[in-house]
Length: 164
Image (cartoon, rainbow, N blue to C red; front, side):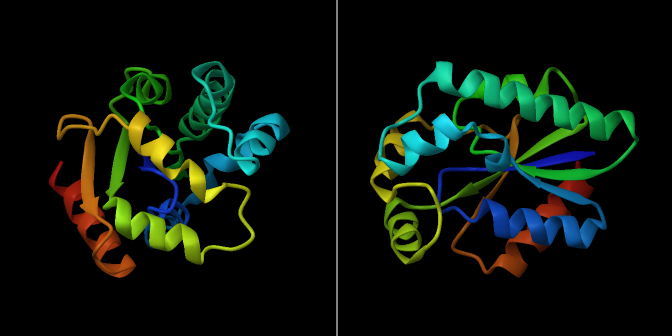
């Protein structure tokens, strides 16, 4: 099984992903690690990424997912996965890939981004991400509110994974 914590910046993908991996006793990989230096530079300067910027990044994450699957490993990844077409690349028709959509209001997300330090993402890009976001339906992802505590989010995700 591959879980991908998804959502806009500030949703808590890294924290929740790390906690899920710990609970599942499996590897955790942050999708941001696969961004090119050029992508990180654009985001640092408040320039939204284009689809052309994202395609190679998404394909690299998919290759990492396939490596975990070939090794027979469960793993947790993070990736904003804002559009269905992006999720289609990561999923590649694979029923073993499950998205976890961390859903939050613009206000909560903006507050979290304002409190964050040391990250390459310029908080001014939040609206761009929200404009790009195509929220996944129940057929595509487990959706959990970021208004819950991290522990409650992880418990809910694992409950829903078990129910599937």
